[in-house]
Image (tube, rainbow, N blue to C red):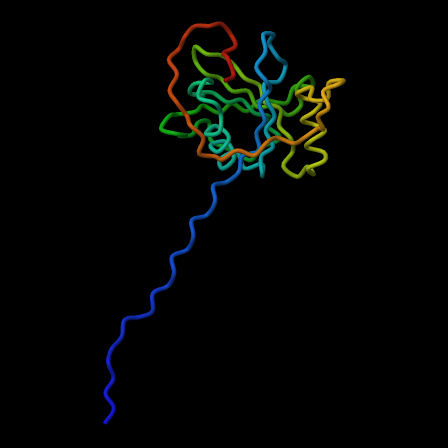
Length: 175
């Protein structure tokens, strides 16, 4: 006589947590003079609803809470007039691209200032991204000895501290 003993189903190993998405963002070094471009952003796609929250999360806390974002209307996918990001409302403004600033994202933080990020097209190669980054941030200074490089990847879960309005003019320290 054969008896069968019920056994528990085999346990499947839990999947490893997925790595945090990488945000390709490079900010200009802090200086005493205002800059034309405050950084370079190389999104993975033109889907503003998925790319923008990741980029905003990677910004330095000194930039404060970004409440307004202006983008090139023709360059990005459809998006609502506002979205909820990191427990706050961010107003999205879509405007035609300026001939002086072809693909730029403008970030506004009440009481702290405005930051302009040059956007590298998502389908750009690493070589093209490095050249565009160098041109935007003046990375190739004579004697600097550094090669052009694309925006540095950072994790999307960067710290986002609350910064009280300080009324320091139009530009805040970048870090």
